[in-house]
Length: 257
Ligand SMILES: *[C@@H]1O[C@H](CO)[C@@H](O)[C@H](O)[C@H]1NC(C)=O
Ligand SMILES: *[C@@H]1O[C@H](CO)[C@@H](O)[C@H](O)[C@H]1NC(C)=O
Image (cartoon, rainbow, N blue to C red; front, side, top):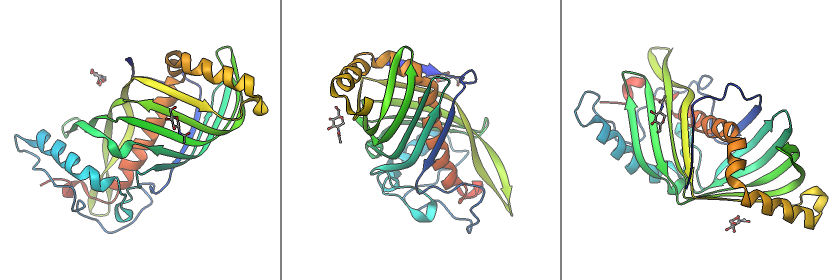
């Protein structure tokens, strides 16, 4: 079991650009204020079972959520399509396009807490497997390993446990307050095993490509450590853009009873 917790990535000089299909930027959308979608049960804010109610509402709603809902700006999760992830560090440039994330729809939500006093949402979930398929372009180095190529990429995470907490602000639009997520401050994850395959490394040099993929798969733990700020930012950006797309449509007062 490999486990890592990050609380800060300020030291990392990296540019990451991520676009998630089917989400809308929260502030620009000017739709009618909505109630919660019918598959999410609102909970009573000051009830003693508020936490338990939020968790069971999230769990019961998930099978509907993962089908996507245009009206609420919820993307389809089978798979979740990410247009592009672009990573630029001092030594490595990676672009992954047409990314499909498979397996988030199988998430088992372990915990879901809304801390209304500290304006914080916390989510813990487990997936049997998350598979990331896409087209990559890559040039540079991780530590001393040269990486160069373009083609199909397959990154498969076995048994990931992911938890993160995100703070939110209330933003006034018209007559209502809306939740707007900030960057998450605390993401941690455990993975049992990571499989990686970059097709067509080094202009299709099969021997070098195989050696490099074998090395990455053997050294996956240190690879994750090197890429950790990037992984953290990717999870953060995807989560924030999805949640903000939804909460921009439902006034704060309509989220609860
Ligand atoms: C991706 O890699 C996983 C793990 O090696 C494998 O089971 C799966 O078949 C691969 N998928 C594709 C589309 O290559
Ligand atoms: C971050 O998350 C870990 C593990 O979930 C938790 O134990 C810790 O208290 C959190 N730290 C902060 C600053 O929220």
